[in-house]
Image 1 (cartoon, helix red, strand yellow):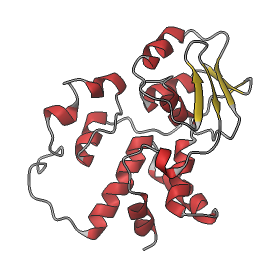
Image 2 (spheres, helix red, strand yellow):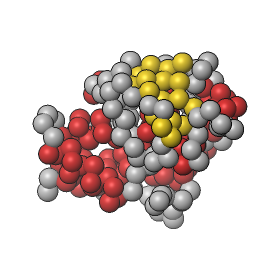
Image 3 (tube, helix red, strand yellow):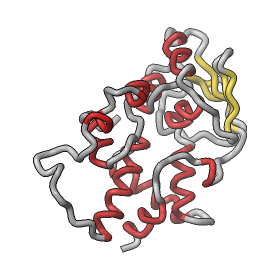
Image 4 (tube, one colour):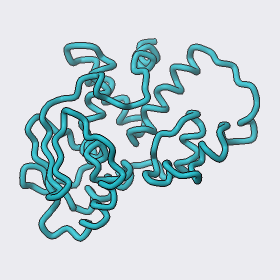
Length: 206
């Protein structure tokens, strides 16, 4: 499975805001954005021309990094969203939100998407009673998520739940039994991603 193994704090600094790629660390003073609020690299503190293309590209890159998706897969998501009825940008975000690794983060069962991806790949979770080890698995209405009976990551998951604020209304979580249910697809107002999806649509429409 292809994934980005580069420094995560640099990704947040490049986008100029916290993308919460490192879980608990992002909430402390050790966060890269808190310590160095300028972009990485030799010319990070220099003036940069803000063209229309640059703004659109940065928005696309931000969405990719936030959800932990590489370029080819992101493009496939966009093409599928453009063929669906409704608003393309909202369809795209809805698809990204329903990824298995992202849903675990929203439920509070993982501190970051990278941790969620690792827990899924190692077979610690089931969907509707069947073990699923695909982080990009698309969850549907009424899917039931539960920790595997023989999982050895219970304490790690319980530690992650302590960092959770509020579970979105489209999800239902039981942190005591470590089970959850997808009630429905999220509405745009319920998606907390720091992304302006219209800029991404404009970029791909050129």
